[in-house]
Image (cartoon, rainbow, N blue to C red; front, side, top):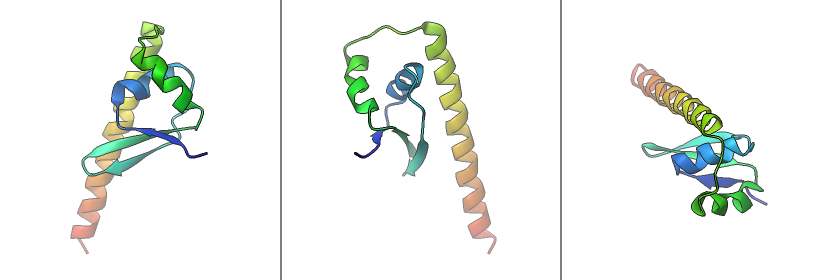
Length: 86
């Protein structure tokens, strides 16, 4: 079964709050694709249905994802600069 992938930032934070590990991120144009283990596909509808989670845990997941996004952008900028210097 393939990983569950989403570009939806709040959904990704929700899944992390539920305990699903973020396996990896992939750059897709100017956005990131968040990749989770396959069972996360069954939890995603719970986000749409408005399931409540701990506000503190959700906020923490948002902060962690912002760090991931920031680090990914820096890595892409560095990669671009490295290619231009060759």
